[in-house]
Image (cartoon, rainbow, N blue to C red; front, side, top):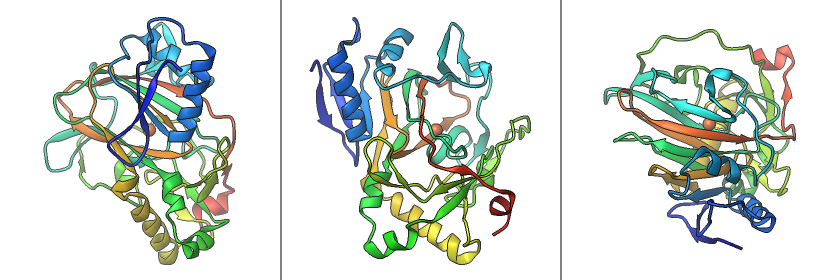
Length: 302
Ligand SMILES: [Fe+2]
């Protein structure tokens, strides 16, 4: 194939070198990249993301792309590219965690954890990096499942948890980073009903078992609302957040990072709110439902 793989300085993923995005990607190379994405969970491509066209050509190796449902977040002329930029004002809430106004801090999560069908994956391209901060981390929740002891595996087998759409970090029940919200709340989001997801997913393509505890969204275990269930969630999250499962990327402009959203959590570590950060994102559509919409009693009561 026209590229090489190298271990990353962390608990998952591979760096890809030698890939030429100046011309078309041939079918064999595309298939090999897709297989490596599924095997390693995260692929890092340093400094070859020089244009929207290069990003789109690479992204299409991994599946059907999904435009953002809200047109505001689309890059004009490129419906499949999502624009994440604070160039024209804040796009994410601003908090003070003790070091001045900060934005884009998003604790560990899977994308669309509040929907029955998660994205298959996504690819970020750093267009303009802030002078300070702005790192992104990924965490291998398949390896986290593999590292559980047998008693815990038996304890969580068959359990479901309720996951909620959340618009503010202050709403998180677990792994809450604290801080003071400085920007006003927006209340014009669509309604997303509570979703029940298994605590243990089976990856639809690799068959691997995955410990699914998206910390941004998890609310309670169905049938275990109360301290015992909450203690179990805290224990599972503590287990997952071990640095040995993580890779944290310090961006350079032109870097691209691809992840498998059904096998990893990711987190944005935030940056000073007065610094500009511009990222283009593509999303690889998921086709397999992992969870289900809750009935009212499950979503609200025990
Ligand atoms: Fe995300």
